[in-house]
Image (tube, rainbow, N blue to C red; front, side):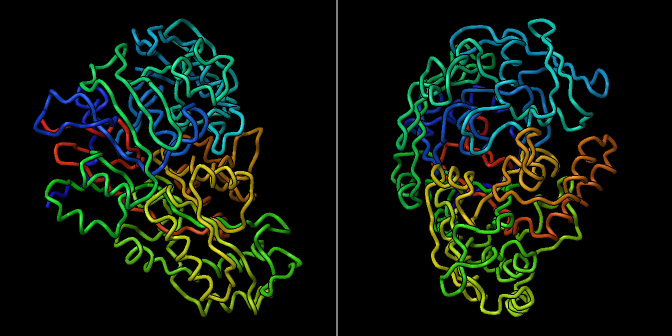
Length: 537
């Protein structure tokens, strides 16, 4: 048995030659050592675009960071560290100054300057048709001043202690390569020009992504010449590819296969806790919802999901322990809020609802639905481990609780995410991966009222709105005192989750599996990219 539990230490992988291994084409085995020149990975979820600013979803970000970098990077515990910016300081409460790393070149050989950074931050404000935009990360920017090729100043609209973390989410693209091009053009190597250790060769949607070493990379030279990432959404096919040796690393290992993999002599299993919340979103803002009817299938006068008692009833119908212990084989922690214990803004007073179908029925009666109503549940089937099965389990639980479930529809994430952004569903499974050290960005994106102008609610796909939560988040965003900021974030969490703005389900424990000789470093961001893979010495 080969089992490795995450040490949560990146060990500077991105800056070492060993990193290059992460990509993926056809690894020749650990015994080959330094002679190995390529590796293959099989990932469950394909990016929607190679434009690094198109979507702030994990499948897009883990692809982007092989080719693109950011001003600010993060360690495995989501703490900031220098990236393309070597230092930064607050000149005054509204002004930040960033000093860029010198001698950085893009993959086409051109030099990266402050003009490229300014262009990227401005571009992030409005990328058309993004299902998960970066607009919230840059919404507080009033203006950007290029001081010299390696220095820029950014003036914010309001004081913001989290500003560095926010703009640290934005990938830097080449202005001369990107200007005038749409997101779809990033499938072309001449447009997908970044400063990361690899550059694009070709992308065959639905099949694979091929990368080659970036010889202009400013860090240590990657030891792999070529990398291929295969996209295999079917769990069984991905596992079979690993066991046959046709790929060397897989993500989204189904929890039910963990026991089998632990018995495989040629495979090493890696795991680590995630900061991603899996939740059920409920369409609580519209009077009529597309997949909600009366119990007999006829039109219903008012959308029952607008009533907090109905949303609470649905939460009490869900047996979170059954999900985490049986469906996930122990690979999950029941959730009651948007961040797990240990992160800023976590409120210890918020605890997961216990399974209480009798109490749920009382709430339905009190809300005026003694016979329940009918709805359809939607879910992705390739976004995170067992997501399709989770949708089916939720359907069964709600049906037992008194709600007639017409259907459970599961779809590939690239289709599903766009439809969710267009508000096509009534009750749907989604997730949010926390990428900063506290709950501010998560709450702002998922639960704060949607505003295109301010960039809030970018992932608020139900258009839930809670004035108390909004006020607390605005105050927290301008609060520099850490204790007071944490208190405000806890209060905001209580306001949103006691109102069941979304129904939290669990925080997953993530699993990866690799052929012996390939070392993976689990991370709270859940990304499977060059930053987290190396080979045995």
